[in-house]
Length: 219
Image (cartoon, rainbow, N blue to C red; front, side):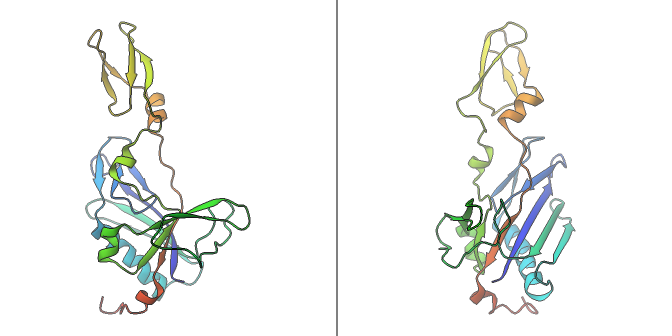
């Protein structure tokens, strides 16, 4: 099996804050400045091809490497040549019966935790078919990335007039409909609505048959 664990972050091109990337999503959302960064399939192809080349030609099992690079934005990736393991107890997962085209969960044989299997997004699969599937990765659309952690809204009181305001987390500056004051949401409240994403390991599994057809010397 050709596979690797990945930990990735980029710097927001707008404010340079760190954005954690826990899977091959279309967008990265910065909680600091609320700007979005598009992560196109070509970005993922280049990055994950470089990971594959190292896995096949350079790294020994269990060996890891960290790369940093500049471009449209600064990025840092750490990856390890390893088979996917449980996110709870780190036992190697039994993946022989995985359907790479279907989202599913694989239970760990040791602790019983669910480990998510995600198919490759079609735009990425078309330009890099050697990727088979992902394990414990967040493969999110822009809408899912921006979805507030608390649904239905939260009630606060206007500090000027005492009016009741219902906020949904889409804007940090909220206009009071009673007195016209612009109410700035506190850090504590904003983080309740938009928790900081914690970096986690996710895995990429490559299609062994397709990988064997790649000539890394001329690719």
